[in-house]
Each structure stands twice: as structure tokens, then as C-alpha cells.
Amino acid sequence: MTQPAAALAASIALLGAISAPPAHAEGPGQGQTAKFEVEFMRMAIDHHFAALRITELAAGTDMQRNAEIGAAEGTSPTPGYAATPAKATLDDLKSMARRNNRMQREEILKMQGFLRDWYGLQYQPRLRADSAVQIDILERAQPGADFNHAFYEVFARHHYTLMEPVNACMTGTDLRHDELRDECRGMWHSQIADIHMMRMELKKHFGIADYQPFRNLEPLKSNGGLPRGDHSGGH
Image (cartoon, rainbow, N blue to C red; front, side):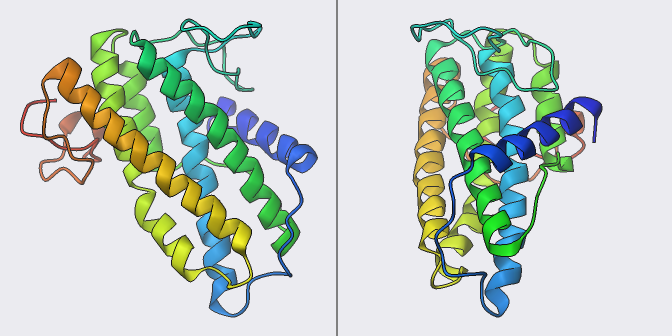
């Protein structure tokens, strides 16, 4: 893990230990559900951890928050990273990035609380290889239209990769763990809605009417073969 990522992970872990709400389920998962839940929540925490950096690159960071939310406001600064200027230039994109940054911080805290209270685990997020590639694409994209286009494809793809595990969460968790299933339902609805919005924005701003966040059949040379989605036009 890079030094900024390690610092961010430690900060989130500490914040989770202080702020996460208590879980109310009756003990840990039974049988196969225990292993499934632990693996799922670790994966989802790491997935959201990457989204914090993705959304920071879009909306920028504010070292001091404004009293009134405006189109120019950035995300909450993430410990471990220097102040980041906004690379996106579309107000709706930056608004979605700010909303996702806030929501996914809260979801990280919630699942850290479940792991701690149900399984006695203190889990620190880590940056996984596929997410590191997506972040690299956005860090290299030029501010403005180039970044806006890349963000819609990358973040829609990022959201989509969580859909199958979230479906499993809603159908394979411990029968008593309603809190976790509720969390997964919320993730499913919010991320599907975001994907739809990003597909509409790709059509509106870039004339791409058939973007799909699925695995690209022709891996991109620029991202080591890990896709950011697919459509009939060029990237």
C-alpha cells in the first residue's frame, strides 16, 4: 500500500472505532454465512475506499468547508492525501462525486462496525489492484472534458463490479443480519441509479448512446487490460 493509502486506511479505521454505530444483530453468522459475510464486507470496504479517491479527483477537496453548499464545493479532505483540485468541470458530475464520497465514507464505517461487533475484527481498508488501475486512469486524465468522459466510464464500471457481490449479500447473509441486508439494498439502489445517470450523461455530453459497464472484450493497452466499460465508439 502507498504511504497516502496507508495513512488514509489508518484514519478510517480510527474513525470507525470512534464513530460507527453499534450493530444489533444476535451474534456472528452461523455456518457458511460467517465466512461469506467477513469476505464480503472486507471487499466492500476496500471497494468504497477506492471510491473516496475517485470522487476526490472529480470534486476536489476543501481543507475548510463552506457554510453553504455550492457548485464549487469539494469533498471532505481525506487524511493521507494532499489537497486535490477538482478535475471535473460539470456541476452535476461534481455533485454526484460529493454525494458518493459522503455516502461511501458512512458505509465504510457501518461495515467496520459490523465486523468489529459481530466478528471481533478491526479491518483497515486497502487499495486493490483493479481499483488502483482505475484511479491511475483518472489521475492521468486531463482536467475538463477528458476527465469528465473518463470519470463516467470508470466510475460506472467501478459501481457495476459491486453489483454481483451485493446481490449475494441480499440473498446469502445470516438470516438474523437484517442490518447488513438493508445496507446492501441501499448500495444496490444508489449505485444502479448512478450508473443510469452516468450512461445518460455520456450520451448527452459525448454522444455515446450504448455505454455498458461490462467487461471490455478488447482490453485497453493503457490500463493493463482492466476495463473501464465498453461502447461502440473509441475511448
